[in-house]
Length: 209
Image (cartoon, rainbow, N blue to C red; front, top):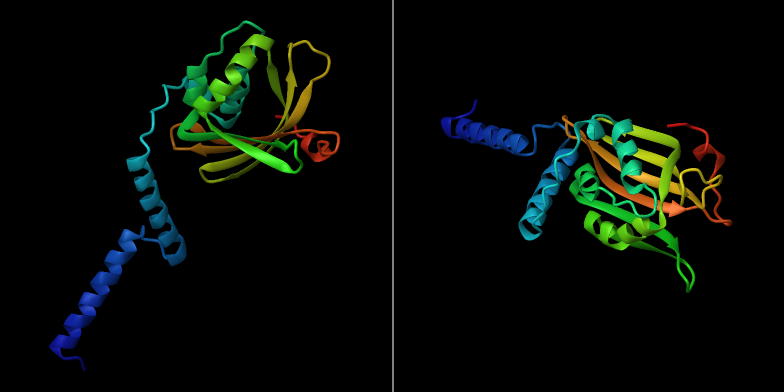
């Protein structure tokens, strides 16, 4: 039998355990809950040290579905020479922390990458797209989805004019998406262009979007 002191210690221990489970999200998977708790702390710190700009209001039809937001992404960067792009529309598709990343060969050998936020992409590529004319279309798509997250391997074809017979470039856009329960967001776009020593595999040319 437990004395009153022993019972009190047990009750205090149970209460502490319950409080810990609630703090970690109430999950029975302790490791996953702890990971989620740690991520939240990191995100809070980032928000305090790196103020983020709220994206412009998106067109409802651009973010209503996965198909819609991918179509909007390709459409917003495309247009003939001399046409101004609607960069606010592009901003509205991405989460505030959204990233665009390119991978390619380096002159000195090997491969490198470049990471940009949406503003960095607009500053580095906007003038070229508007001056030279640029049309990019999705030729094929492979999607993996779990819950609110999705990963899309989107095969692209780039042309200077919409009616060009052949694209001057092809490659893969690796696109991360998130649905917040109200709309779709682009988290990141990570791409690599096709090369003679790295042709597109047939499996990424079969599935039509």
